[in-house]
Length: 207
Image 1 (spheres, rainbow, N blue to C red):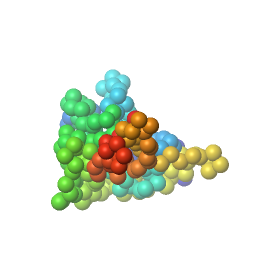
Image 2 (cartoon, rainbow, N blue to C red):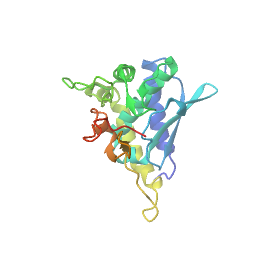
Image 3 (cartoon, helix red, strand yellow):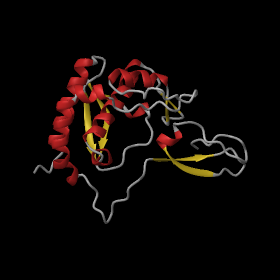
């Protein structure tokens, strides 16, 4: 069994090549496979050009633990952000915390699907569509390759249990009180809509 990320990177490279063949605006990327948790924000500053190649696309061990579908969804999600970066379109608000309509458009372009009948909050906080059935079919061969590669690579990316501290994908939000109260919520929960403080009547937001 391989102890390097080589098999997984090969599977990811194959997936990216198909994406680029269908979306020519996507540049070549140099992906990184890491044991640390994924970032909770989507800042455009993470993208950098190294010649013709763009860096900044990271797949974490936490994402791999969820399986091939989640890895594919993560790659498509980042592809949508990268399309907007190439096009010069800011696609988040609150310093990368919330996705806007430009992100939704690019996400649907690469194969993510907004659930039918789901109404997004008017301020654009709710746009984070999941992978759809069409994308699963289109990338079925890459899902198989990822399913084979992940078990080979994941055990060697895991931080040892004695020292590993898992950082949950949660946001710390503050209200507008003179002494702000703080809450922690999942990012997906926050994106469903504003959470209002019953004292100051202001929405909780990222500090």
